[in-house]
Length: 333
Image (cartoon, rainbow, N blue to C red; front, side, top):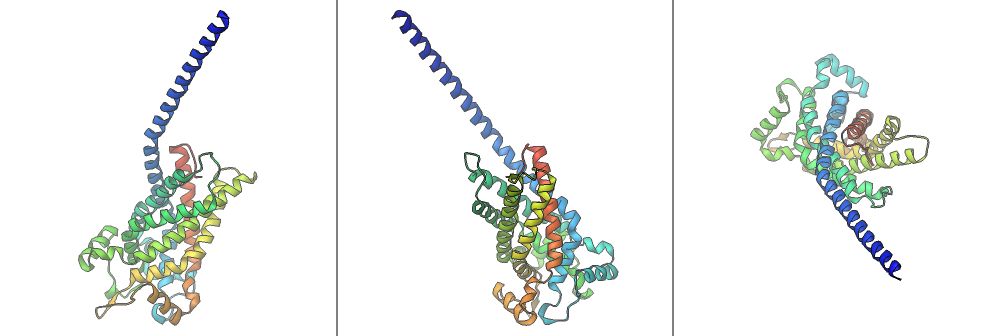
């Protein structure tokens, strides 16, 4: 009996010791996680901005053509270009090939603000709502994360968006009416001085609506398409699956967001005639376009918009996935 009692006491002491060790390890793990989560979150924001800026350097000419196409035929006037390829040739011939990169500084500033915010917020929110058991996030939650990221990103990036629209559209105006901004910062300073700082957020409402729809479709569909591809067993989590998922995401997001993008472009580029704005708001833009140009005009510039958004989506996610893998050792969920 004495031996049994002593053995039981030894087992109790050993159990208490093991529980203390496990508790200490758990606390250490939690403190490490808390200490690195802030750094990881910051890196996700930085990676998002760098990926977007790298992609913009590649697709800026397509973005310029998209803007020109959306403004062509405004107010029922004759269309300046029949299609995107004619627009490309006409701009290069009339303004020179370097003109295709007009507004690049504003495009980079937009990515540094808008894309940094939206991709960073998306990844952080995804981590916050991710199931604790490690199972894939439901599709509806991915859409919610995209909506949230788009709304926050658009509020931050609207000033750069206004500068970008005006700089890319400037070449289509008569020389006497051109604004002649030197760069994005010159555009923002002149807009604030000549029209008031509130003009930085002109068209903010359609910009936020477009960003919410676009990011829900783009980010949510990308994550879902990538999950389906990788889980099928035919693809690995590599550049091929990232490219295919990006292409699917780009097409869907183009189709659902281009009417809002046209509305935003018209509002941000409008001028005041005899002291009165060309459009009174979102509804006025839509009704005017439908009445004078036809319903199909809400999808005007679909080809350059997709050619811009598709490659931009592909390059952004490829760059982002590689940066995440390099910097924090994981890809997007």
